[in-house]
Length: 627
Image 1 (cartoon, rainbow, N blue to C red):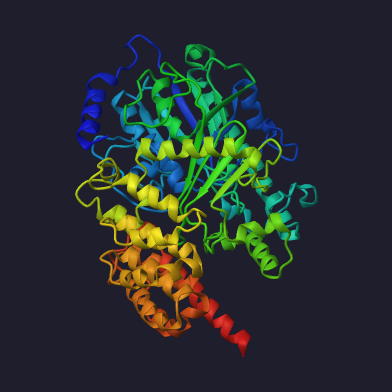
Image 2: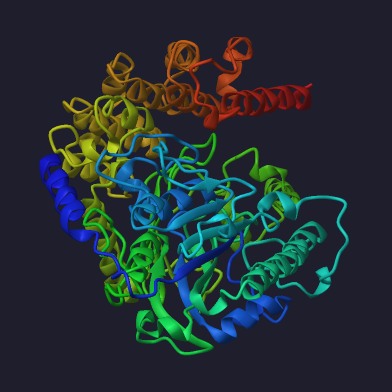
């Protein structure tokens, strides 16, 4: 919608939508207990290996949602989804970790609750990819607690537990509780002692979490508030094991969700609510903020993109859930996914990049390292090898017969109707929410200097989405005879179209570069640095030897974070790393590159240094092996 329409809708909601409970009606307290990096590996979800009595007891008196997705398979964008009720792909905040402006008419849900009289606390992780406006929480710290509210004031409180985080899976020494010999190894992982220990330690951490949840609930009961408080428990995305975390498949997005609504507030329960029951309704993190407002008697804001699944404004069941992946720390990617009750569809827009890109933090986990070592040694089967291979443009998995998602059905004739239906659902969402993730990350920022990425995305003059998206689809497809069309699109007036055109030629390797060599050479002088980087990588990797020196010069120049924005430097260093041995002539220049700049956002941490270390380490190791 045009910007003016969005602003008018927001104003209407502010005037008419904030209807709260009458003064004499009781309002529920709401307690959210959350945990990090764990899927539905709990006893109440049928996992016999798990030891989670407190969570099982909560499920026994409440409602267990069978299919809840976190929308994003990593913490910052997942939490950004929750705090707004808007897809980060719409606000430009999908990349792990980023920091973008939120449009002025939007609010984070605690702001809305506070305006309605609630005392709102967060203990304690935030990690939002959106600039946080003032007045979000009454308190957000390790000391934040509902007990600090005014007498009689209703509260909304979060207690977030970190004991299940990815970093705790690999923490050594560790006293084992669950027997590694009895753990189930998913089909995509190799069966090694390292993998078994990591999985077993993950389950040990779940048991520790379970005890902490029990303490949260006991404290509530001892204060006499249990029957006045709606309780949610959920994890923030799939398990911290590789190919769960950071993967926008069911393994990375499926989380536990338990909801207890006391009898006093039975009128707020969804229709399917039964004590100890289950719901097969498809719900996700984008639905949490609308549901929260619905539970306290407020109609969700028009700009919220999720659907309330409980309370006075229950929107009813939805047909699909949607997931996404953008940049993961220092590594670039763009993936969209969708599921219904049975199938998961995954659309790769950068199929030339494997799932198992070298994200430094992920490679600290023993499972990741041994998995990659076995892949390099050629000792994995087909299902285990996929993680480190070039991806298929489209994936389709049947969760009934293939819960580990290792049998891609996208090419099967008998599944084409399902493929087309889910592909269509994903396309529809792109245009409904005006997905700005198809802009190079640097342009998300440069195009929104005077507004916000969300507003840019909703203005077709600033962001011709149809043209950009159609080029991205063509670029990432395996459509025959498309290289010539992509070469022509390198002359388009919009730099995002040119970016995808160049990327499509890179994806097609020698065939693509050979069909548009002159156009790519011209693109080395493009006004957009993102286009120049892709053109330089394509020519250096798949062009003629004479092209390599100039391409390396372009990439090294754009990798200088003191001269370029951080997003450009990260993109250029990724290109240099992917060129492998062809980067060797630039080894000294890379070594001399600065590793940071005062203007670099703190949230992007040491990404430049990580990329330099990886590239230089590979070149040094290769040189030693060749001696």
